[in-house]
Image (tube, rainbow over all chains, first blue to last red; front, top):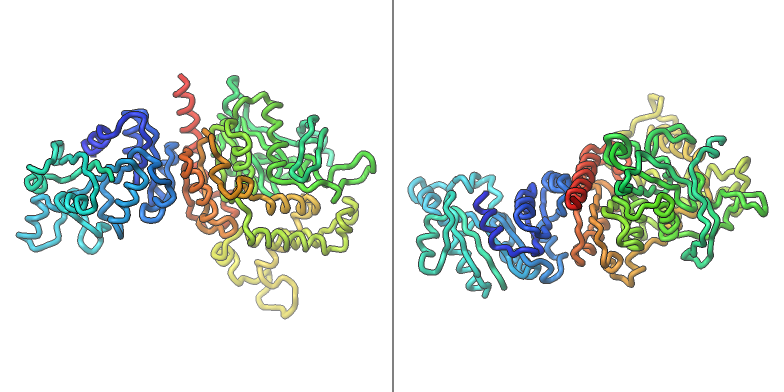
Length: 198
Length: 377
């Protein structure tokens, strides 16, 4: 978590306007506020978590990304963050479209389904993978659309979305992903963090 | 009503031009305060009351001897913590608790003004209350807050005075009174005006109040403040002190008895003409129209932090209408928080003991207040 926040925070230039979609308890918002003087807003679907955010005085509104991103005008934020929730949407494609409409840039983090442990689970056990980042069983997972770092790369290329930077997270190890090491990073990364622009 | 003499009140000398075109001056505005204004004068919160509220938000109302209308939220250690904040609450103009209203005695005739009172708006109410800032020499309020019609006043206040409150808490309200709400208000007004005691509004307060009409108005309105589920759970089809139906029109059911009681106690504390004027002000409220259909423009340039709250079971001022305000604020990049609180208590939730609601406000205000002070150091 900490490393992910560090990477996200490094992506963001100072004095930016940021929207954290699916901001949860607001820990990333607080982290960003502590590390840079940024104007950070949040959108969160869980009432309980929204109440926690508001108790901390954060500008968070209750709503879900698939319906409530619509209300934000075009390019109203410098960055829109989507941390590890893309896979839970009915239509990740539309959410990404909206992120890039609302934000000048989007930061998207995905749990990597191409990680070797995930691949091994399915290959050797013949069972749906259960890992630290994906702790659910197939019948209770909120993750409807899992993808790999490679998949997301392909998706962006097909959609004409510019990938500015991709970072691999493996435990506490942070490294760059480029075209040349993509196949390898797709095998060893637990998380992929993408900085995107339309 | 000897307590009326102890009521705090300011006399607003300067002329207030009302939306209807008439001008008023030298009129009283009754208010109450809780807590202390600090030296920096940065801890003041102006609370706006709803349709039938008054300035006695907290503690015991000295006139009715009952708990203040927002006693759950306002007081020492409560959501609006009076150990920390200085809470001001005024009776709206058009009201009947000491502020200039249809019940005010006209010195020329020595009778209540009655329906000769001008039709007032939410905007007029807010402009009148703004005088309290001058009176207390408060440069900027920490917060403005209110539910229902109080929330409408919050919106109007921030729109009129974009730099006069750091935080705005509009609760269970709307930016534009709906047809359904106008309809319910009209039902209440018709009940009052069809009472033969109403006498075109020129009834003698002491002897011939239109009590029956006002009680029916209150009964009808009271239903709209509750939810179907809440009513069902509280009353169901329970019978009132009887084991069987009586095949008549007495209050067989507990819900009937409850409503009759609500109606009967209301007439003791509220003036029928005030009810007409205040419901009219609510009906006329359309902040979106004030800004030619673009609600965002109402809040242009505001630095105020907004926290909007709605309730799941409130069908009178539903979440969708509260969300319209959130959307308008987001469109201009205002600092806005929003949560819909889950409860079956209906529109009345904001007045009741709803722990989630009360604690979230408390934490929000306390954190925001200390953040503002930290930044200053």
